[in-house]
Image (cartoon, rainbow, N blue to C red; front, side, top):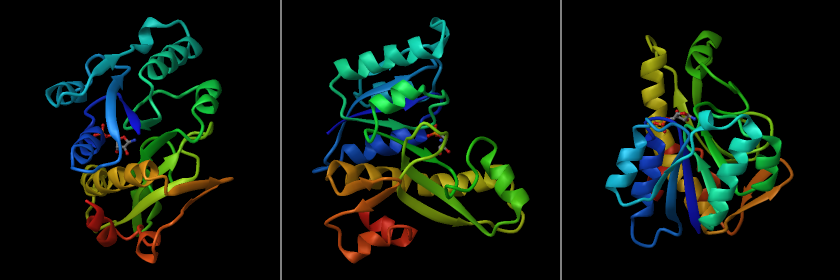
Length: 218
Ligand code: GRF
């Protein structure tokens, strides 16, 4: 499975995906890392690790449609099967999302459908919830919406700041994103309407919301 990773900044999730993809027998290949931001720190890491990079700067386009058309054209030329959004900070047009339906996934630092959008950790702390986490999901036209592939639960601890909480969640993001990609590349994920199920999986995979189980797949 040929995979493109779209980033806008540091790209730590991209790095986790690249590291996983280099393990023997991993069923997906990262064929390109694309950024809308020429200054994205993650581009350097990709280059150093032999992954082709591409910058398509949204500022060079008059509107969202033209920018998305350019991305789509590039990804099609690269024969990409799956797009992984990893901190890609541009909203995608309806046309783009529909064109890549069930071939585009995203990671979000909350237990969706809770806390969609920005300032996620601040809002989680203000809400008083005891648990938050992260979610890998298929992308649908609504922001941070779509069938859930993998989640990890992270506790909120006394004295947490948004920054501390973000760091704790990021550790789990780096585990579940490669796991979700592996499951998709193994064709184990089936989408039925708004629900994604893991087919052909044993019971232990059905409990992959448990970070302790996820660590087995590292
Ligand atoms: C992550 O927290 C991810 O969940 C969110 O944006 C952040 C990107 O971080 N979508 P990085 O660029 O992968 O380090």
